[in-house]
Length: 236
Image 1 (cartoon, helix red, strand yellow):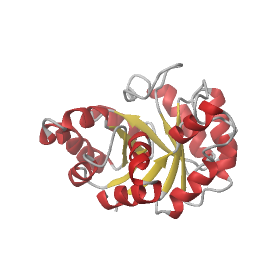
Image 2: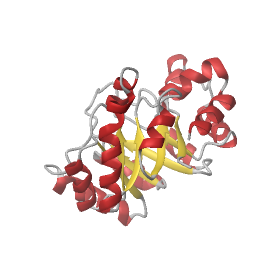
Image 3: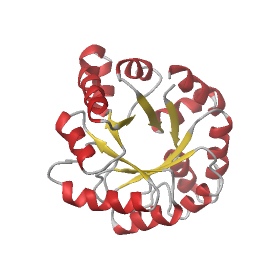
Image 4: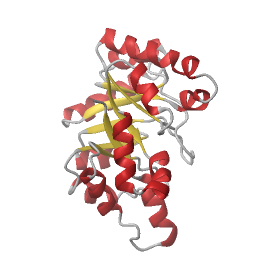
């Protein structure tokens, strides 16, 4: 089974919009685990508009499943990750002020820069995943610079799924095969939802983990959080 890591950023965004501690981010993370999620993901950005840096140690103290911290690896993010030692760090090429992640790393032209970051994280006992597009040379590049896993950026898949599922998944199926051949683990995330998740999983070899936040929290408004987590698990 592919693991489900629930991204709780949107829970923090809702909390921050009103101040105070409602909804309780820490309790939501604990409940997601109780309901069956195999991991919790956060993506602290420079503007801290949802997950705040102070949330990370609080989550680290209670998360019993896999804890995954995503983000752009500037010095402040790296310090936060190393201080809290999650199971996994996912490197994402977000620029300052970016609304959401919308592309993968160029693991060829950025190889030297990324290699140093990966080495530092792995020296601290942290598994490293790197956000990439479903392009063979980028996956091969991720392996060469020492990443343990890739996270396939699935935004284009989700966009095209409604009109042509087979065409939408083709590049990802091939990417998973490349990852298998070079010996790097495969995660995936971005705009995966109850409609497109099962088909994606069935077409991507050895998919280890999906990170889902926005769609899952939206579905929880209708179905309730406990039921929604179970619905996503059934798709996997």
